[in-house]
Length: 332
Image 1 (cartoon, one colour):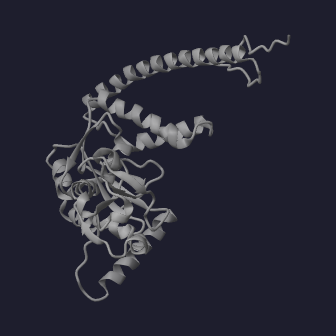
Image 2 (image 1 turned 60 degrees about the vertical axis):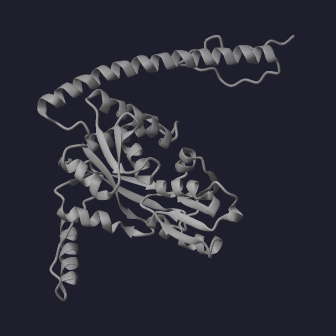
Image 3 (image 1 turned 180 degrees about the horizontal axis):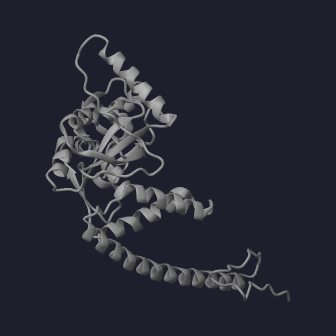
């Protein structure tokens, strides 16, 4: 009888090459060996994470003595770029960054913790953006309005806030732009979030008569609504989460909501259709607002807030001067 060997020299650092065998017992043994090797690697990962945590405590101590901020976005950019180079494409880039997002979030906690304000309630796209940037180990505080987010940071009740500033299909979020005019807060980092809206309801699709959503989402799905629900009543809400709550409460009236699919899980709705936005590449840029002056990372974006007098030709002159400034600095 032919015997197939499955690499007695295999180790967590040198996994065996893939071999074919029709023998169930041998396959079971090979699977057991592979799982034991993975368990050993996992144990080593945990030990390394514990060692990393010791150094994070030391970094936190030094930062506290120097009165330095815990969140240093330019350092994160350098770290994530270095990890991508070390990975060399073996792991999906998004997966590697998601893993390290939570490791970094844990580091924030070990260094003293961060409090982040965002437009709530839970389940909004602002909530998703805050999680993407700061992870699950930070305290995320939902606010009722964009102004509340600014006020929380301005009064020191939160170190940072997350607010949307621009959408690829709907343009600038004017309510946020207006708040920047009078606020002393600065943009410390940006978050680009791919917005994939869903149709959610607790009733069959053919019973839908009312669509609830935030004005931005109604704008992002305008053509889709016209094609599929031309006669539906459109009701604007303060957030996509509020829209889902109303869809659940008013299901008997034919209510549904458009927004983040996480809301379906949170409020017991069914996802009737995914990706209902008019543009497949529907991206919203969020700003992380705070008091600190961040340093250049090498790949940065500068936002200018300009106030001009309402006089003829002022707008054209401002744009002209801005272009000269950009051209000059691009050639330095």
